[in-house]
Length: 313
Image (cartoon, rainbow, N blue to C red):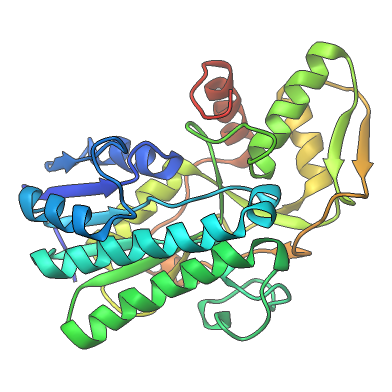
């Protein structure tokens, strides 16, 4: 199947976030009208307000990239916000989409939906087959609920709602606040500050966990590809196909930023899941592959950091 965005009114919910802004950039290449709503204009946790806005704006396609997001520390210390707010956002937008007859909706999840000890690389079928990583289970449960809500609307009402599960994303618009950031932006900031001070770079935990990373503009391109070429209930993994240990990543970031200082580990901090590498064979079979190599993406992300294109700066 092919769904054309040409001439459509396309709402990017969460357009100021890292993924949402990348989707807006990618949609600039399409012949469509992009709809956005700032936070002071529309509270996405308010179902009545969302429904009213959608009835007025009448979007035909929706990318649901809005979410309450953060790293291990933020997830572990603010569980109510990460569970409640994400449930409210998903419910409001999907309910509104069904009500106003949206033609197609893509829901963005996260690789943390999978069990902590899932077989690697992680296939889509691993969902709900084991216990979650405790440090981010609140966010994961909310995202799992979003996937299932999209499936439920497809089954009961015939809505063309699909779900994409991206791996760890990074790039322009990332959150560089060390109290709320994910590993890539945190390392970029730590290495930058260590370079300025001539000090050590501190790595959380042992540095042995392995993670997969995808440049955010590649993720946006994959989302448009799925919107145009995929229509089914199962969610689709969106990844780069390779992983790297946190210590190896630290050394790579240091190389890109041209800093050869010491590295220390903080064993008092958690490691998180031992490994997260997703199997993106289904996406590849649909004809999509990432374009940005990890080293190149880190350089682009660092340029964005220096330019102040992110949060927490």
